[in-house]
Length: 205
Image (cartoon, rainbow, N blue to C red; front, side):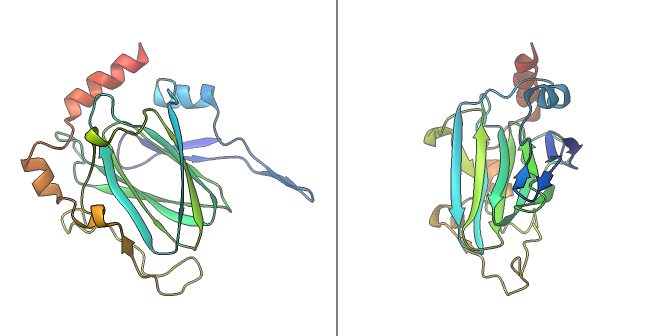
């Protein structure tokens, strides 16, 4: 299992060792000691989510109030998605920037994003399945979004699916009316880096 920190600090790509033979395939998707060594604290697993999406479906950009936020350990056991992490932490050197990782059923990578980061993905194949290990349960009052097509963030969403066919992006009604990054910043909706860092330090104690 290899960890690679993304250009957005606090997010990692995790590549497992795949062991296959004529019977099939085995991998270790999550290992607590390796995770703790890299991230600095254990994953406090509180909820596991699963979504299944048609090709072109975009989910996000979503984030939660900190504390406690909602850290996520994400993989795609079936199909393929482009997973996107956005730095929404006010005061961060990479505020407004994003990075992405292809999650699919070939390389079987995972992504971990810590508290305060924005998360989104687009499905690159019908019935793409995404699993999320979450550090906090769903709480509607403290979960928010930023518009996935915000030109300031300028995510380079793919135009073709996994097989090279044209991709028609689809958004939920909630994500279509989400505020822009500038609007979310002006309203005080976004988490602050200093608050996040203090909270994450408490997890390491």
